[in-house]
Image (spheres, rainbow, N blue to C red):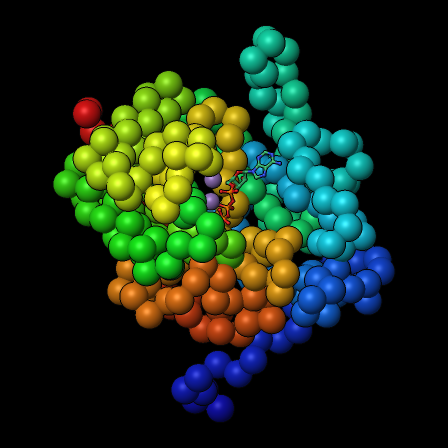
Length: 299
Ligand code: ATP
Ligand code: MN
Ligand code: MN
């Protein structure tokens, strides 16, 4: 009786106490998935997602009527989320403070889903130390129609350039078009240093290879190039969180990926919310993804 099965069977149906209303409402019309299925996805992925999503100010992409109808990006607490969604006051540019949201558990995630959330985006710092960033992201945004192999190569080269500076980085498929190169950092520097490093790093790459990279947002300059979007690293910016679903056709998800695994990947959205069994199975191989104790070097 104490013989362990060789492979775990399908995970049990997700248990949570959040009541999901209109669970049969189709919110991904192209693939037919419902709000209830999205809630089940988040309930099961929560143990993998929370290490990246919990205790961090978040913004939500809410689409109460489904992804094809009106969606909105919510940064501030509306006071309507209940006890599992917490508030953290953050100083605004005008000197006042606004309450931002954060969650600490599956109930918090599920409460947001109940409120129509599809996507979760996070700050690059934690709710208990908002002024000390702990995650730098280079969001690679390819020009329309670019071959994904070029995005993969770019991510790999950025990893190499970061490695030359002594920094370990990780790849995440955005669930959309690009790859995010994620650099975990031990909190200690401020947002000015964070932004400055990421901006100079991106600008150095585009100066070295102007035919491949741009470091400015201008769409005109992006022609056949990849925009290294370093602007995610400014105070107040967010990036989609690992394992977040995307409000895009087919209910894709943003997923961590091993550098070795990246070669065989054909686009930035190989998995969707229906692939949660596979995502849970992959978790073992991805242990350690997104974690490293390291400080920003001087450049
Ligand atoms: P893709 O790979 O398709 O580019 P992405 O998540 O990287 O997917 P971007 O358009 O590059 O999408 O956006 C980068 C980030 O900007 C998002 O992850 C999100 O956190 C933030 N963002 C997106 N929409 C808004 C918005 N309406 N308001 C504020 N921030 C936003
Ligand atoms: Mn992007
Ligand atoms: Mn971007």
